[in-house]
Length: 285
Length: 320
Image 1 (tube, rainbow over the protein chains, first blue to last red):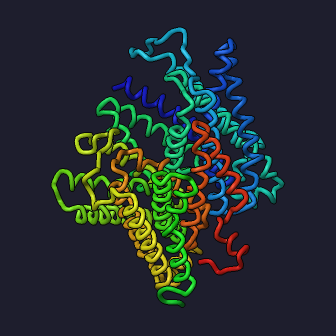
Image 2: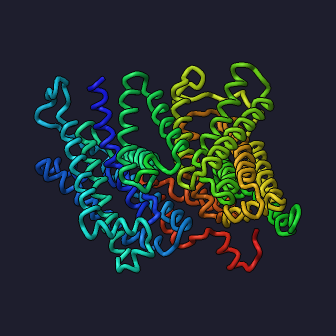
């Protein structure tokens, strides 16, 4: 039981890492980033290409993450800026189509240009015994990375001026603008940060399985589901939703077959959305 | 308010019929390939029909149904499996498929409205429905043959002949357009316009928002279900990927937005443009998806509100 639970928590942290960017971008600008999974895949691909060229794995991973952060900033400048000129539903729709187009573009480019490249990271020691259970070092590495990322993110949002600016924009953008917060620049920063976290999630996935160019849309869909179950506006909600779905997934794949696992996972997501449409932690956060 | 068809609607429907009737023959002559011409025009008609229904559901009542493929597919699989295993007549099973899709769409809509789900939440709930449907198809291998799919030759109402099939789908599209126009010309259309503007205001004005949203979803889903079942007959075989998200939902969303939401002719024009782009892009092979993405971004930046409003201004005609 305990090993499965641990597995679930690790998967959950990873899901949350992937989804947190979607939550932030939506919370800040009412924009749904449908190329988020592709961003994660791109980080893995850049890392894989650099490793193939003989670069050290850690450096290559860092370069991959940095590259997609820059890519996200470029995306914000070119594609999302025009969307911010509209409000509400129109903005949502415009961003939906533009980022979907970008997702196609990235998917098409990667599968066309690098169909054979995939990222697989292997740690030197495959597994260790912790507290009586055998766990993969990859799991520990990912949990530590994810926990560190979330802690830093929380500290950033609570302690720094920029973090407070981000939260005020999430609550009320007119009010924030009146307080002298530059919405455009803050959004660009958050889109870049989201890209960074997505890149981290893509690299982390490389520790468990190989990450290839065709996995982008799968990542996007998973991230979307987690973000929405968490309530698309609350970061704690996203993390909780990730953990919930990760644990459900781990237990389901232990108990039933592949298809049933997915059905069960989606069923839980569906029921959660219907029972708590405002998000898991709506009344607390 | 206007009741029934307006003059512009009648003219549009007639023009659409007149343009569509010789289209595959002309295209066959231009492209020098009858089979291919009929294939792409028939696919275009199916996409247009889905988009008309999706326009009703998403355009007018703001329910982002990302389960168009699942609705079409569930109707198709139900019809095919009932006919194959129980030997029921094709007309009956097609009708049952249609009813099932209508019921499923109505149920999803009812639950979403009751729970007060916003646009994105409905999107994700229906996305989950789509993925569950796909996995059920793969899981219940005994009935559905999993990824291999089912050969539907000899089943269905007899759309094996491509010319017959083409004109049946023209009829289906015109039927969908007529249903759409009738609904929009009835008190329901007034309610749709009111609630697509502001739901709360519509509710306060005495409009039963739940009822009209469920009505739109059920009617739209019925059209989608019928189109899906007929497509399984025409296509000769069905498998999960024919009704997958990327094959149906994404295409329908693009077709509708490109043509123009909340217009009668938008879905048809969107489907024509989409078919043309598909034809141009296809020879690129592997790069197709990339070119496709570029087209999507460029077209959407250039014609944000869709092609119909642009045509209206250019031709100075009140295109409905």
